[in-house]
Length: 118
Image (cartoon, rainbow, N blue to C red; front, side):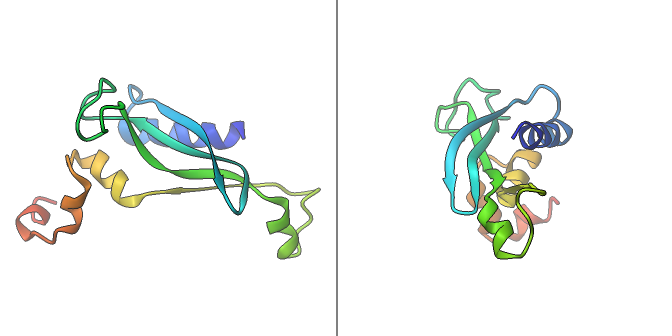
């Protein structure tokens, strides 16, 4: 689990800079155990709380966890010998944070004027 959390934190720092923190909270996903949700410091308010982060200071990025041994068994891999982790980022949320888009719905509006700046 430490390798998984370190991988996510390294990714967040590489994409957004060392001043951005990652936060991990316990969660449930059917194919991983244990499972976590991960968030990053809001880039708009730097963690103080704003309308973008719903005054929490954090933006949720995705979910992750250790692959459940039953998943390995289902595909013929020995879970006593192998382990692994899985994670998924919300690609729209990554783009929102990376490019400073203050509302994620703007990415889906289809307004050509917005899209032309990229």
